[in-house]
Length: 234
Image (cartoon, rainbow, N blue to C red; front, side):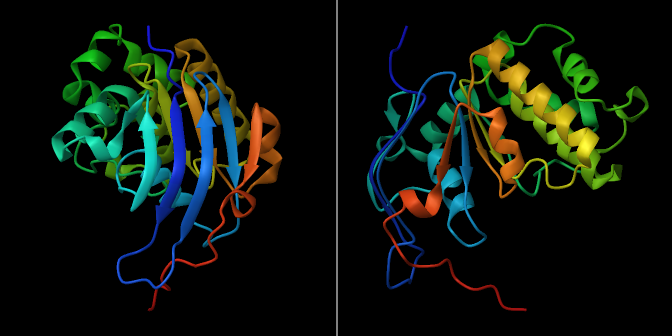
C-alpha cells in the first residue's frame, strides 16, 4: 500500500494567462491520508483556483502538485483524467451536474468512467448516499436540472462520494443549504469520508464550519503572491 500523502504541494507557482504576476505562490502544503482540512479566505484570494490545481484541472506553471504521489504535470491529459476519475471526488461550486440525466444517473456517473471506483461501489450505494443526504425518493428519477439549487448541491455531494475516492475536494458546498440541511450535510460528509478513509479538502468562507475539521488554514497566510484574479466585467 502506498505511503504517499493524499495531496502534496511543493514550490507551487501559478498565474492567469496574460497576467503580470502570480496569483498563487505556495512553498509547501501536505494533506495526509484521511485528513480533514478546512481552507478559508476572502473572495478573490484564489481558493477555487487552488482546488482546480490540486485536482489537476489546471496545471501549475512551476512546482509539484501530486495526488497519491503522482505529479499532475507528469501525466498526459488522458492520464490526468483517468487518475482523477479513479481517486478524486469533486463537489464543484456550480455543481456541474448533467441536467438531462436523472439524479441516480448523475450520482453513478463516476463509476461509468472509473473501473476502480465501480469495483469499490456495492450495489445500491447511490441510493444509500441519497437517503443519507436527505433527498426524497420521489426525486431520484427526475432530471437533475428539475431540482432546486439546494437539492442539486446534495446530488453533487453524493456523486463526489460514490466509490470511496482517496480525496474529496469541496468548493463552498453548503452555500445553498439552510442551517438544518447544512448540519446534516456536514455530518454525512464527515461520516462518508471517515468510512472510506478519504481525505477531505473543504473550502468555505463560513468560519462556523471550521470545528468539523482536523486542521484549518488561511489561504492568504499560506500564499506568498499578492496578485488578484482577473476582474469579471458585466
